Image 1: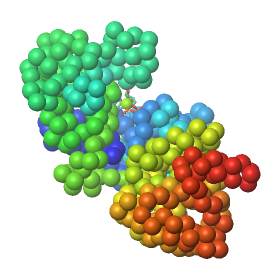
Image 2 (image 1 turned 180 degrees about the vertical axis):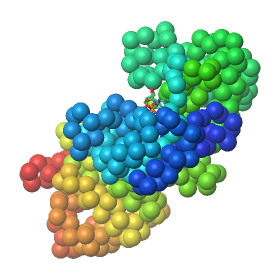
Image 3 (image 1 turned 135 degrees about the vertical axis):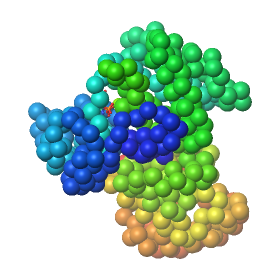
Length: 399
Ligand code: ADP
Ligand code: MG
């Protein structure tokens, strides 16, 4: 799960991290009110979307010469103008894709006199089972580009979570940022605070870009991105409450309400499968037959009629779907009950695309009978290979 910049800054400030003052705003009036609470005379109005690259982004509605999603303002009036310009419009950045993201929230924050920009991030390194801290003197830019063209400017420090964050880790981070004197001390303290936040909040990723050195010699977090391990969210109801569903794929939000594991993909064959392994195998075999899956969908062990209906609706809400392959192994669930669910769901949603069903397991014969006698144009298949061949052929024929 991702959260907005202002929410992440709010969380980090509780760990003592130095952050410029700022206020979130949902309306132009709130943006003006927020600015009035700041000392001025320099303000920054920042679009809050779950994507980076906002500064260099472009608003779809505003033409190529308009400013991006991070704007300096020298007066309250200018804050108001920027807020009017941004709210409700669509910001396209390198991370949003061509469709862009609608800006529904802003953050009005203190303008900072920047002397230098740095990069600092932490993430779970699955290969080593440790926390990787990445530090670079090249802040404010695309870190992938830095990694590609000047990898020597990036330092990676790994922390064994069983051992914890040690003073030498802090020194290595400050050294990686090439900081000296008091700034070096500040960087050591900051690295420890960030690590504490990372662990305490069960983060998956925490990125500070840029971390800045101000003209008066302070280290401040100017931009931050934070994402969390979804499996640990139950431990953090306060973090879960920060979820902004308008930033997520609507189909994935709907699926999570029914406890369905759904991930949208780019193909045109919708898949409904029970079990993650079988779902992966189903996607593989669709590809093997020359087509592409439109989604990953695991309906889980207890596929009730309600769940199957919800799954059908979610699959069909994707306009790219030209056919559906149902591949269910009735182990705990019996095939006849699943078949009943499929037939009811297909009738309920007025299924308009070809449907191939492969059932296997307990009561499979009864299940097939139900499908055959349903009066619906359901193609039943005998095994996984057969099913994939049939759905690919059906979709090709329909095209
Ligand atoms: P993004 O990464 O989405 O483009 P950032 O918050 O990193 O957004 O902002 C882009 C750039 O804008 C920063 O690298 C920094 O130079 C400048 N900037 C951001 N916030 C402030 C601020 N509070 N004061 C001064 N400059 C800022
Ligand atoms: Mg940034």
